[in-house]
Image 1: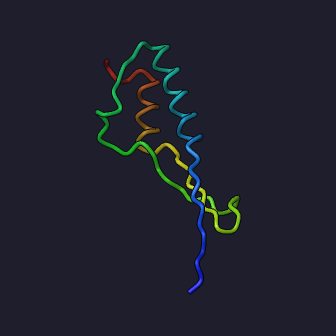
Image 2: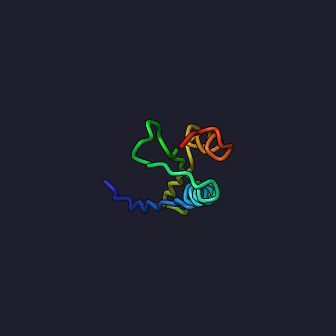
Length: 81
């Protein structure tokens, strides 16, 4: 049996960029919320095998659809803090 070495890398830059944009929106509106209060998933995971080399797997974190809808509502000012 031949051993195969697999390297797994995580790219959280897409969701981190989105969180920074949301943070800017909240600072402008003086809103506050706590991530622990969310009842939905914040991220979705995708595997990027196009840019990975042999024996390498890249996991990319993106904002979930529910998180995107929540942020849109939040930035539109439809939530009472």
